[in-house]
Length: 155
Image (cartoon, rainbow, N blue to C red):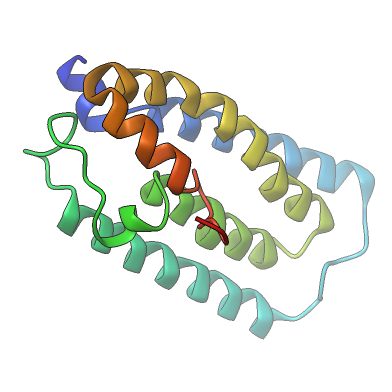
């Protein structure tokens, strides 16, 4: 695992996809002239604020458990990692993307937020292979009991 992979994982590639697909959604929204999602400025601001708060809280919680010295060197299974394998990515997928979609007030942005999930599932495979090589059986067992982005209801 390179130092770059240890620190950033597949985040930069995911960010590039997220921003480019958001630009496409924005263009499509203008082109299609769809009805607004809710039409309320208060709901827009509250949704973005709530999404940002959830994202920041999960990111901070994750960074407490996965400090820079541990990245790629220790298999962290405590804190948010006890619930999902990728809480940093999950924070953006769950909190920020849907908060932004509601803020943008268009159905196409909800579709955009939903389509982030299959991309991230494909994007994360490489990172999970690196983790499997690094931590072996312990990581495979962790994968069996912990969801990728959403907590498993049955362990």
